[in-house]
Length: 265
Image (cartoon, rainbow, N blue to C red; front, side, top):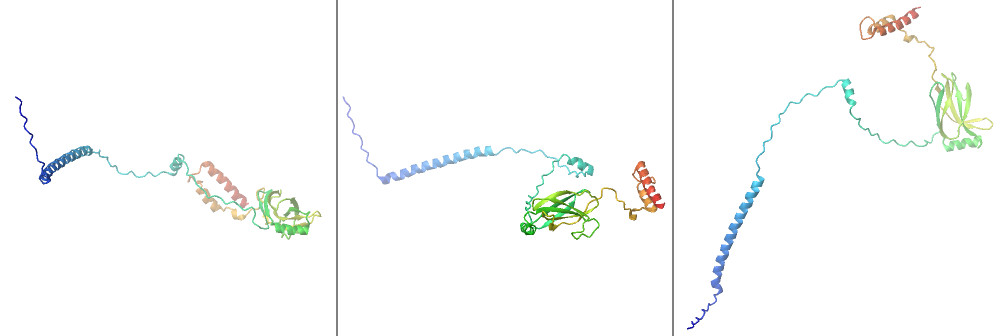
């Protein structure tokens, strides 16, 4: 016998009002579960982070503090010796300004270099030189005239002697061989005409060349009296005191004795 199929129960659809409270309950349950899970996850993360950050304290060893030692004072000799091992600091000087090529003056200067030589430098403006050429003529040459004016009041014509040196530039310098120690000189810069007439443009200062031997003048101010000699001799260790050597004492004694006795005579 075949079993008879029972008819299926027809389920009536529930209304929306009946479904809403159930849905709310389920949502609340799910929300509570998610909050608990989030809190658990937070606790785990915090524990991991604190483990990594929290490290055991490392105790540093105590460093003994020593008192400062006083700075050593070096003697001058030691300072000189120490300075050999240090490089000197580089000193930067300000840049030098270039000197002008000319100053716009009519000037000549002479300087003694040694008993036999002198140095001369000069400058003449173009206007002054042209004015002099109109008087002397275009054929006149620029010339240095050197005067020996030893022991005289020079007026331009009473020199003991003179000689000429031809030059070619209105600005220049020259070394002059004088060959006369202990003499007084001055120099004129001017134009020399073919007829040997000389027109002065500028006149230099006066110089006296040095001597080339010991002076013959004996000044009494340098005489040493006997009392002064004894004091100097004593200070030099002549009577057994002082730091001078016996040889030095003997040299000083002979020198001063010779001067004193020669003056008495």
